[in-house]
Image (cartoon, rainbow, N blue to C red; front, side, top):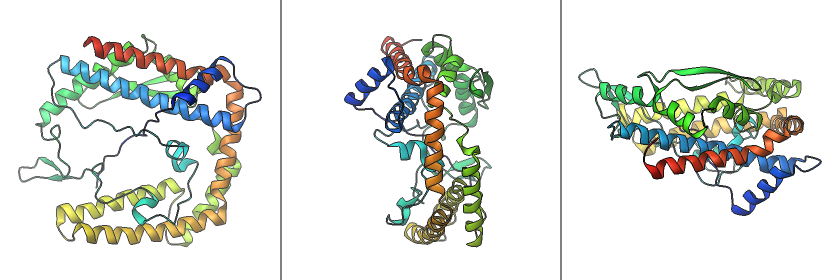
Length: 331
């Protein structure tokens, strides 16, 4: 079953921390330690999300100026996630078995972000989580996406960045206009800066032999439990799909109630989490990932200090530019 999920949430940085980071921007501390790198990385990742939210607001204004009044459900940005939320299970991956099943991985059956699509009587798509936009005729949705992204299929443009490598940006339309407006015509350079600052992308820590070996040990262990996953991210993806299956059984097939679906899914989550936790303990995967991630990041920051510490200022300037555009009501 297809599903729709949200992007990584934004982090609202407290004023005192923001002030400390701006001071760090002017005078990078010596030597760089994990506490400093962790604080600045969290701020950089949050600032990048806030820029993305600003881009979306400006692009929405742009399509409204073209006469569009109904929009897709916007991305949600939570206020105060920590690095566990920002970096996720790519670094901090062991499940917490003390939590209720639905909170262990944060995956639920009754999740409005999981939108199932079924075929209606007339052959059209019917969404199990309808909203005003998906209720529009397909031609109207296509016209919106063409205005927003430059094409009905939302095709992106591949961009090669000098320090970060290959990435994508909007192929055209209002999002492309918003990118150029907020970045003063230098959006690829902004993406390159964000990559160097750790806010978009990261180092090659996952290719370190210690991580590769620990993940292989985790994978061998998890296979012994009857599951075939190469890394924890794949296990969580499989559970996400199972949540969609149970949602379909509840909302589409009517073969079980929501309570029954949640109970059955909860049993699967708990069984998977118990195996996952045991394999983390056996492989030492989380400890290895955390150690190697920060080892690489601190070395990376040492080679890109100016970009790492100046990103907050650049992101703030782009957000301020967005506020000016929104206040003026035109691009």
